[in-house]
Amino acid sequence: MRNIKVLGSGCAKCQATVALIDDVAAQMDVEIKVHKVENPEEIMAYGVMSTPAVIVANKLVHKGSVPSRELVESWLKVFNL
Amino acid sequence: MLQIFTYFADWLVYDLLGLAPSTKLADALHFFIEDSSKIFALLFVVIYVIALLRASLNVEAVRDYLAGKNRFLGYLLGSIFGAITPFCSCSSIPVFLGFTSAGIPLGITMAFLITSPLVNEVAVLLLISLLGWQFTLVYIAVGMLVGMTAGLFLDQINAQRWLQSFAAKALQQGHQQTFHAIENELDTSPKMRFNERHQFAKQETIDIFKRVWKWVFIGVGLGAALHGFVPDNWIESNLGDGQWWSVPAAVLLGIPLYSNATGVIPVMESLILKGLPIGTTLAFCMSTVAASFPEFILLKQVMQWRLLATVFIILLVSFTVVGWLLNIFSSFFFIN
Image (cartoon, rainbow over all chains, first blue to last red; front, side, top):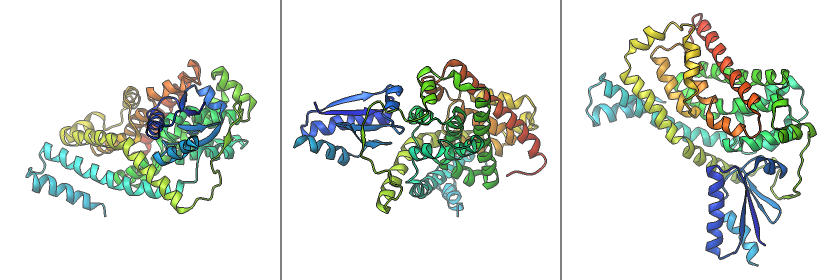
């Protein structure tokens, strides 16, 4: 399953990140599942300190801000291969 | 150089709108226009420049630097980094846990977290432009001192025993517990090309603007209302002597009110110009910023009630004492 995890405790930026990823995925016609990790204990277990953070296929690809659309597209392009 | 905003406000209020100077409405409107235009222009330029410089500083680097430092140096550094490190307040908890799981003592983490909302580049630049550099230095010193003292006190009473159990455990284990093994693809090298810096700075500027523009209008609006509609004598004659009870009252009043540091500074300016003593004003404004219910609700996730209450009381007492001291000292020399 193409998993993307978004780490963040539910603030506006974190929600915007989830929405953006869903939006880009729909636009690119890529099927993905976005998991929201909101529990602080779990976020700590990933060793992440700046949220929102994005993990794609077990790799930390972004942290500290809402990613740009281009960046999200680059992640999803991999799934299209 | 900043007179340009005065001229702009003059033109808009007196020429374009034709209002008579020194009427309450004209006064308030002039204050509003001058201050908000000045603030937005300054925000734009200064945030960008400072962000360029700060692009390679991140909380992970701060954590690695603070871990294992000597206690007393730690409080000072924690506070300094809190003042200069950018992070979104929704990251407070991840930052708290990140520091804690690296074994950084609770007091140092709290020095960081307390100073952070009080002292940031936006607050500093506003203070310099509205109230001058002497007052700004006082503000920064107070913000850092409160953070450091709170941290020191918390460690002295072993407040870490009042952390939620998972956080307490993380502190004891003292190193990064990554149960979920993930690869970190992000470039952690401190060298950054200019374009990367520019991108970061641009994004920071946009982000901060989006976050604070409402506060600027609200803060300046309140300041303007105060400026235009509260008679010059009223504050001076009722509270101008810095009566001892006015400081704790100001601190208590600040608790239910919440504002970003940005929004509260124009209000501070107005209060001071109206003759409210420096100590009372500072106590009120810092209480408004630091004693915020949203932040405390977040902290509940990692702290037990007792710790939350302790932090809360420490802050209130600190601001009251600072208020009293500043009121006493400002009568010895003229600040601002």
